Image 1 (cartoon, helix red, strand yellow):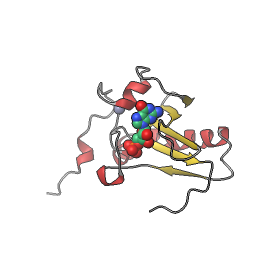
Image 2 (cartoon, helix red, strand yellow):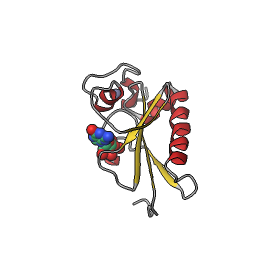
Image 3 (cartoon, helix red, strand yellow):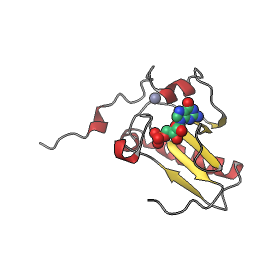
Image 4 (cartoon, helix red, strand yellow):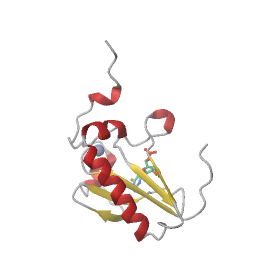
Length: 128
Ligand code: 5GP
Ligand code: ZN
């Protein structure tokens, strides 16, 4: 039998008390919110890597971006649509921007609630 990937074990949608982004969604931890929809919250990254650095999160808790795509594809679409709206609002829709999911330890994922980084406002250079 094929081993099940680790990301398939999570509890989709269950808010986690010890999840930083669930706590931001719940309003328990302050953040500079730039955009909100029924399903998505977008806020400025606390340690910006570019002049515009916004983190977009689904309001439901899912640690892994691929599991989100498998189990709640509408949420994934909502993340990208919201990212486009934020890019327009931030004035970087035409100059260009990077959309990025860090997924797992080697990618440097530090918050295990799937999130989309929106980066722009300067030439970003090639990925490593
Ligand atoms: P990751 O490294 O998991 O892809 O991204 C997590 C991001 O969340 C990092 O870019 C980090 O700077 C950001 N971050 C960590 N803690 C906080 C916080 O308390 N507030 C905000 N707004 N961003 C945070
Ligand atoms: Zn969470």
